[in-house]
Length: 522
Image: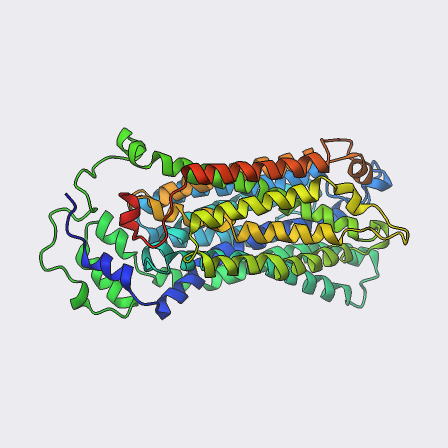
């Protein structure tokens, strides 16, 4: 028999949208901002690294000059993703055991330290620089991974049930601004360094460029560092305090401090004997038979959908560098900053025209259409976009009679894929795990789901980077590895998206309009 519901939980679910909600969105969103800033800036700064550390090797042919080897790029991407996967599991579990608030600040400090350390990277020798860069990117990944389950869980537990999806989506939309910021910072830094009086001096240019890529990485830590104080001032979520720590009075007091609710409205006159949940047989442990009976399907759905999404999403992120490089001039004709500048400019255009609008559509429609429909729609239209890009791939890049590639259609389709990734599974896979599980397992299960996503990201980014290589790309960078080519790789990504449609339809529950407690006991 269901027990009396706590007033503090009812008040949270029916609370009007207030200033604190918007403050929480900004504070929680800075971790996601840093995540996307780092992810998208690494493809930009490796262009500068290639020109600084791979410019004078006598054992390299001209074709290899100025190119960061694919194996180095793979390692720099994978080490951060591996750190993120570990961070999601470790910090997710700590968030349930120790509380959201104490662990939240530690994750942010790791992000700030990892960003700053990536810029310093200790040495000047190429091998030492790359190894130390990899080490600090691993620490950055730990912090980013820890931030995922905590940000989503905190926002879900503070929000009301009517606009909960929009609030969590708004937190996640900070990724879009991180993408735009990484491009903007790269453009500004590259432009400033190109205007230096002695920028034509080759020795000075190499030293300045070595500083430029470090500066780009370090600036990513600034927004996260600025929000540390406010993170530490946030109270523990009322749901965690009431349902996990069993301190209903403290939950009511914390809620009164930050939201426009009177303590007399939410104080309990006669507390239930054990206010941990709305049902009586709730003493099962994580990964017990009872846990899997109640939540196994939900955990599988969240994990597999995030896994499939990140295979596609991270593949397409790395692929954009290749797309942009085709549109740019020969590397021999560019200075050390021009290539990064041009790629960043095109990345900013994609962010403004496709990525950020996708996030905004999710914020607006997530509590109107529902999570499941948006996720299925996103996967489906991503599949169509990848098939449309992949099947006629080489016709997009063949020159016409005026010797101009006919690639505008390809870039439009690429933007469509990014739009529906963000107005689709990239947002919903972040939201749903924070809504389905009991408070004492919530951040743990979100972390597990996200870790599966990062495993998919590793498979997608590394696998696609190598599998998509064809003879043209192999000849252009001089690294003699030939994969299955762009056509087959893009069509495979479309197939993965179709699998996502099926798994969403078969396994994913709709959470829109219900309280967190209703979702967990459905």
